[in-house]
Amino acid sequence: MNQKRKEYLIKWRIKNKDKMNAYHREYRKTHCWHKYYHYVKRGRRVWCEGLKLSIDHRKKISDASMGEKNHNWQGGITEKNRIIRKNIEYKLWRSDVLERDNYTCQVCDKSGIKLNAHHLKPFSLFPEDRFDINNGVTLCVKCHKKTDTYGSKVLLYNRGFKNTAELK
Image 1 (spheres, rainbow, N blue to C red):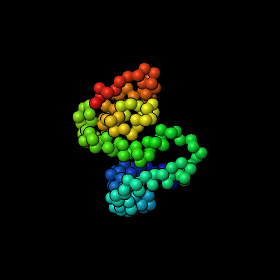
Image 2: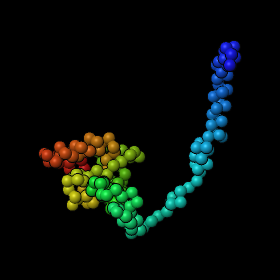
Image 3: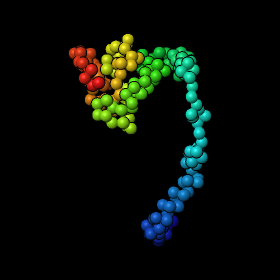
Image 4: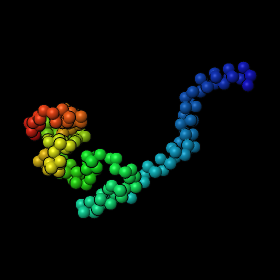
């Protein structure tokens, strides 16, 4: 391509920049398969959407895919606490705590935001109280991070026992 042609194309692209952007946007909608695929899939429903399963059935599904029965089993490298948190009993405990507190943070009284079910006695240190509803309180993410048992702060909590009952 000669020099005059290059200069002409550069000037033309600058002059018609908005037209080209619109053209490329339309081209991508129609010619890129992944965009088309997501566009087509957008209106479809998932097969299990709205399906209500009984608690017994949910427990059976949970037990059927636990441990060595799971297709992704890697020899038991998952820590025990994480296995319990994915169990149906934990999910039922969490929903019971949120429902009891009317889906409202018990510290700042906000609702309609992301909520956590917080264990008053730490999950990892008190296994006998893990599924006790009286050991739970509903907190928003911001208030949950301020507790003395959030995340790695539980290690400090383990060294010098602090009372978190004042949250409730």
